[in-house]
Image (cartoon, rainbow over all chains, first blue to last red; front, side):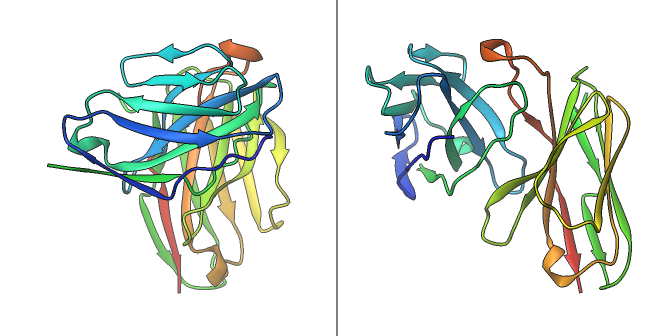
Length: 111
Length: 116
């Protein structure tokens, strides 16, 4: 699975958009980009995933660059409850999800 | 309506003891996992079962023995507990499929194991 690089921490004001970047320059053509988050004292929570097209769901949007070497997770209107560690994971979806979680980005949403 | 539930939430025990952690999912998934999150917050896969069959075993010591009595349950038994086993253990489940239909992982809220 491709290695991903994320900034260790980011801050965001409540109500503003949070844009979390992820670099995956060695990603292969059949590797997906997945985003999870972990709120303190809880298990990781799935957010969104994509292969090459931009994706949007009720939680977030995922923008993947055309060369697929990087992506951005967008939380359009961050709330205090979005404070969490966000993990970007690139892996080949062969069925069995042997996800490798890195250190992620700690997002702090402030009032 | 909890999707993936683990018991107990906290487990404090002494070195050398044997303990078990239970996990149940009501999502109808056919694949279940155990992940370990250490003190540095790194989350690593330990085991995975698909339809009660072991499919991933990430060089975990033999003291750790997962058991899956049915597709909805995956328990973790740990023998001769050591200080280094202290961590948060997360159970997860998913539906096996290839490609975009593969469901994401659904995690439980973890069991914090402290070995003294």
